[in-house]
Length: 84
Image 1 (spheres, rainbow, N blue to C red):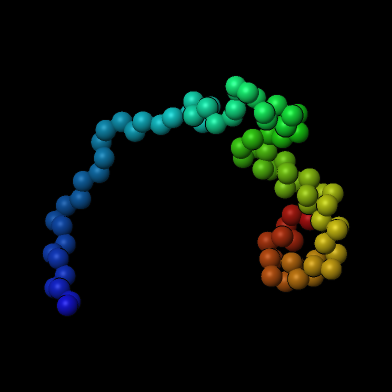
Image 2: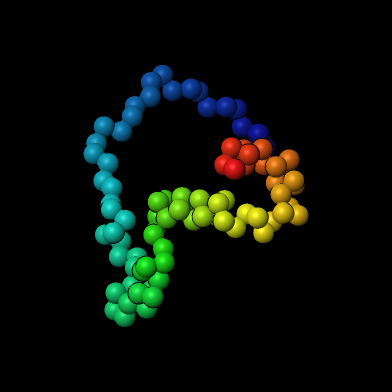
Protein backbone atom coordinates (compact mmCIF):
# COMPACT_ATOMS: atom_id res chain seq x y z
CA UNK A 1 0.00 0.00 0.00
CA UNK A 2 1.44 3.36 -1.01
CA UNK A 3 0.46 6.42 1.01
CA UNK A 4 0.19 9.97 -0.19
CA UNK A 5 3.25 12.10 0.60
CA UNK A 6 3.13 14.22 3.73
CA UNK A 7 2.98 17.96 3.37
CA UNK A 8 6.29 19.82 3.56
CA UNK A 9 6.89 21.82 6.74
CA UNK A 10 6.49 25.59 6.49
CA UNK A 11 9.51 26.24 8.72
CA UNK A 12 12.45 24.32 10.11
CA UNK A 13 13.88 24.79 13.56
CA UNK A 14 17.39 23.95 14.66
CA UNK A 15 18.92 22.95 17.98
CA UNK A 16 19.70 25.98 20.13
CA UNK A 17 20.87 24.23 23.29
CA UNK A 18 24.37 23.31 24.35
CA UNK A 19 25.96 20.23 22.86
CA UNK A 20 27.65 18.10 25.49
CA UNK A 21 30.81 16.36 24.40
CA UNK A 22 33.15 14.05 26.24
CA UNK A 23 36.90 13.78 26.03
CA UNK A 24 38.24 10.46 24.80
CA UNK A 25 40.48 10.17 27.89
CA UNK A 26 37.40 10.34 30.11
CA UNK A 27 36.11 7.10 28.61
CA UNK A 28 38.96 5.21 30.29
CA UNK A 29 39.49 2.96 27.30
CA UNK A 30 43.06 2.10 28.20
CA UNK A 31 43.52 -0.58 30.86
CA UNK A 32 44.95 0.45 34.23
CA UNK A 33 44.35 -2.41 36.70
CA UNK A 34 46.03 -4.53 35.54
CA UNK A 35 47.73 -2.52 32.82
CA UNK A 36 48.21 -5.40 30.41
CA UNK A 37 48.84 -2.92 27.58
CA UNK A 38 51.93 -1.34 29.15
CA UNK A 39 54.14 -3.36 26.83
CA UNK A 40 52.65 -1.36 23.93
CA UNK A 41 53.07 2.14 25.37
CA UNK A 42 56.39 2.86 23.67
CA UNK A 43 55.39 1.25 20.38
CA UNK A 44 52.29 3.16 19.40
CA UNK A 45 50.52 6.46 19.56
CA UNK A 46 46.76 6.09 19.84
CA UNK A 47 44.35 8.15 17.78
CA UNK A 48 44.62 10.04 14.53
CA UNK A 49 48.23 11.09 15.13
CA UNK A 50 49.26 7.46 15.53
CA UNK A 51 47.37 6.50 12.38
CA UNK A 52 49.26 9.13 10.39
CA UNK A 53 52.57 7.86 11.80
CA UNK A 54 51.75 4.27 10.85
CA UNK A 55 50.68 5.27 7.32
CA UNK A 56 53.87 7.30 6.84
CA UNK A 57 56.00 4.40 8.08
CA UNK A 58 54.24 2.02 5.70
CA UNK A 59 54.58 4.30 2.69
CA UNK A 60 58.24 5.08 3.42
CA UNK A 61 59.52 1.67 4.49
CA UNK A 62 57.19 -1.22 3.80
CA UNK A 63 55.41 -0.53 0.53
CA UNK A 64 58.38 -1.98 -1.35
CA UNK A 65 57.24 -5.43 -0.19
CA UNK A 66 54.17 -5.00 -2.41
CA UNK A 67 56.09 -4.68 -5.71
CA UNK A 68 53.83 -7.16 -7.46
CA UNK A 69 50.72 -5.29 -6.37
CA UNK A 70 52.12 -1.81 -6.95
CA UNK A 71 50.91 -1.32 -10.57
CA UNK A 72 47.47 -2.54 -9.50
CA UNK A 73 47.43 -0.03 -6.66
CA UNK A 74 48.41 2.88 -8.91
CA UNK A 75 45.71 2.02 -11.42
CA UNK A 76 42.94 1.37 -8.91
CA UNK A 77 43.91 3.95 -6.27
CA UNK A 78 45.18 7.00 -8.19
CA UNK A 79 45.33 9.14 -5.04
CA UNK A 80 48.07 6.82 -3.78
CA UNK A 81 50.40 8.47 -6.30
CA UNK A 82 50.25 11.66 -4.25
CA UNK A 83 51.67 9.82 -1.24
CA UNK A 84 54.74 8.36 -2.90
